[in-house]
Length: 201
Ligand SMILES: [Zn+2]
Ligand SMILES: [Zn+2]
Image (cartoon, rainbow, N blue to C red; front, side, top):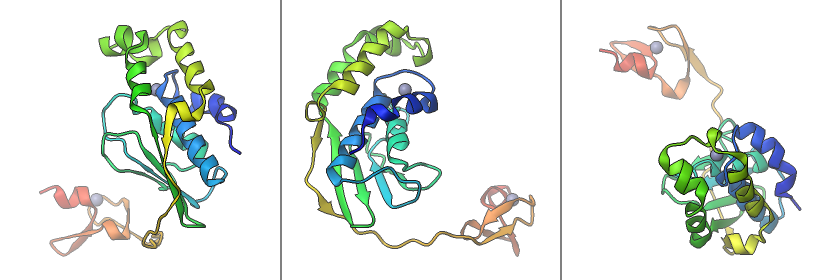
């Protein structure tokens, strides 16, 4: 069993400020991990598909998900689907099993009615400047609520993906002299270059 509270301190440090969305990501991923019966990974044996878009509220959710699952931008086992939604699908690549967890709409709508949003965030106050007494109760609420009150949890389903090999090949761009992963090379007047150099007239 994975416990979100065991990761809260580490996640706050990684995330850099207090807000309710990051802990919600911790709890969502905790719920998915326990449904599948998997532990945090230092490798790539888990995959997270996140439905978030860009530049929207509660995007902080992604950081909680990364810290507790070990599925990270760096390891490439966290993919963003760009739906502007908060569902996450956790895949156990060893068994090909997956589950989707999504916060209940009413939970997120309630959070949007709190002072944290109404008096601070929506008025342009950055989360780093919101008083602790305003945000801490929201964190406590997310961290202690029963998972079933926060999320809808789908049934476990099968998930298959095309095997993708990690590229270890690279070359030096003939214009800028910087290292480029082989697959990203472009030809420009007979020279092998990187994408920015290919785009520069
Ligand atoms: Zn945040
Ligand atoms: Zn270049």
